[in-house]
Length: 216
Ligand code: NI
Image (cartoon, rainbow, N blue to C red; front, side):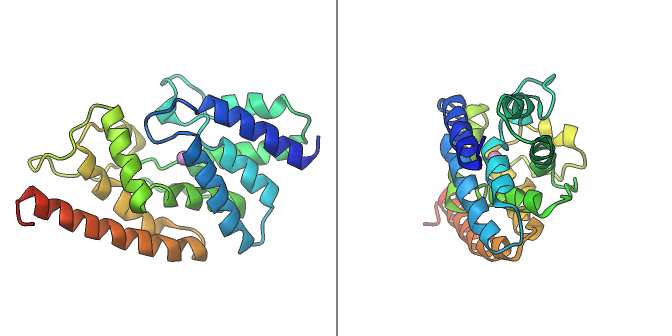
């Protein structure tokens, strides 16, 4: 199967899988991650086919969107095996999917290949800035969380279990994840984009607290 056909088929599959996703992990998120990954990928020495395929499949097995018994990579593996593609491609893409997700403030998530680094950066960029803010509140609402409660302080999660079981208000998520992402980018081009998006979020928070306290 040629590469263009693999991408096109996968794109259609993911679009139908994620159409009714209301927690900020919808098809348009996947599509933005794919576009950003390709943009970053242009600046790096990498395999753009692997980057694009992994970006399209990166959320299919995410712990946030599946039940707790779900095995990481199993849906993506099933999909990849349904197409005529090389075993090596399948294992490279599955390797990336296993590496990209954020698992808590104090939890390191190192990547082994440049392709994984790129997809991770693209996914993390979509979690910050104006879109990141929108997605964060969509996710919080989807989980019935409060927008903000001044009495509940943010916490630094030391392991994945702790992070996963967190029920804190959405504003806390800025401190527990979003504001940490700028320093966790792998590639130079992502670092530059992250800086600007980060500054936008800090301005947003300043305005948020001022409005909260009836100061403006
Ligand atoms: Ni994602």
